Picture 1: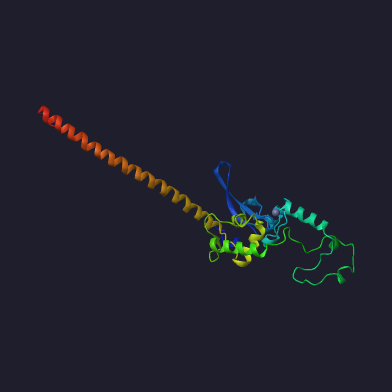
Picture 2 (picture 1 turned 180 degrees about the vertical axis):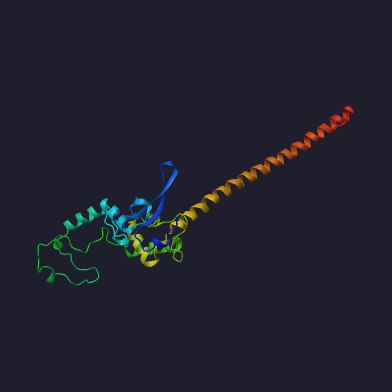
Length: 243
Ligand SMILES: [Zn+2]
């Protein structure tokens, strides 16, 4: 399966997942931009069809844009967001970048349209990282993320960075990583080969241990042989027969 190229620019990864009967089936794996929750859905007909995958995730209650991972949210984050919105005073239609807009024009033209009920600009669940938290995350990323390869070093992930830096929301760590260090370049074919390298290394290590063990046993057998041979020679000499 070689769909490395087609996986670029998508909001999800394609990954072979081992199913019952030892069959590996391709799945779309998406990560919630809010909380880092992961969900995988089997590819319909085994094909990487973004429209179809988008539909499947949406049918399962996710906010999903197959080409934009910052628009991927799990049902639980969506409901939290909806609740937060209702708690809001409703004076929240200004885009994030244009500040200084309070008061005056917010109140005018209150039409009871759907757009007024559900403002297009959505506030993220948690806020944002503090300056100190951002510094910590950057330092940790600098040590454990190879931005040239677009890969974490072994054992590291957004989730681990988030945890190590004081249980921060994974989505915020991920967003910072995307901006400051770039995206994770996940290529299914490479992932598969990487897994094979790990497996072969494990087997090599095992064989190495076996080899040491066998050498020790062979060494001991050699010593035993010398000893028994000399007893045989001695006994044969004593009895005057050939050894
Ligand atoms: Zn979520």
